[in-house]
Length: 257
Image 1 (cartoon, helix red, strand yellow):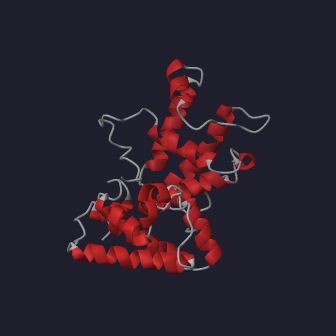
Image 2 (spheres, helix red, strand yellow):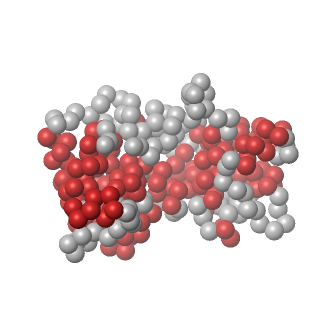
Image 3 (cartoon, one colour):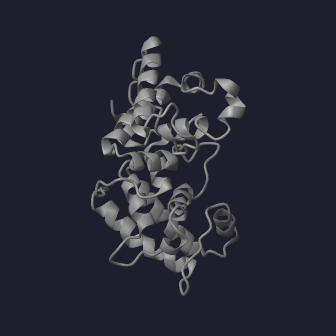
C-alpha cells in the first residue's frame, strides 16, 4: 500500500477527475487552523499557500495547472451543477467573514502565477502543516500511519514488536517503497534530532504509538533504518532505473538516484 499521489497529469487514467490539482490545493488549506485559512493578501501568501508552493517545487507544472483549474472554475461559476458536484467532493471551503469562496480562490491566483513565472522555486523550509509533512514524506507516512497505529495489539497480538511490524511492512510493500521510506527517514533526521521535533513530526506522519524499550524517537527511527536496510540487502535490492515508482512520474524525486 502506497500513500504517494497518482499522476495528476494522466488525464486518460480510469480514475482521472476534472479538477485534481484544485482538490490537493484545498486539502493544503484544510490542514491549517480555521482562523488561518484563506488569509492570502496581494502581498503575502497564506501559510497554506506557502506549504503548497514548497511542495509544488517537486512537481513541475503543478502550480500552472492549479491556476488553470481555478480560472476555469471561476469562469463557469461555483453555481454551475458540474462545478458544484466537483466542489462538494473536496475539502469544504470555510471562508472568513466578509469574503466569498470566489474571493478566496481569486486571491490564490497571483501567488500561483508568481511562483510559475519565477521558475517554480520556493524557499527551502521545514514543512508547516500535516498535509505538507505527508506530501513531503509519503513513503514514511505510509510506514508510520499504516503499521504503527493504535490497533497494532489487535493486528499482531502479543507479538507486536518492531521486528514483527517491519517484517509485515517489508512483505506487503514493494522494495522500492521500502527504500524510499529509508531515504525519507534519513532526510527527516537531517532536519533535526531534537526529541520534541521528532515526536511532533512522526505524529504528523501518522504514528500513533510511542517507541518501545525506552528508545528516543531518533534512536527508534535509526533502528527502523537498520532493520529495513538489512532486509533490502537480504533480497539484493537494486534501485530501479528512473523514474522510481515510489513517487509519481512527474515528481522530481522519481528521477533521482
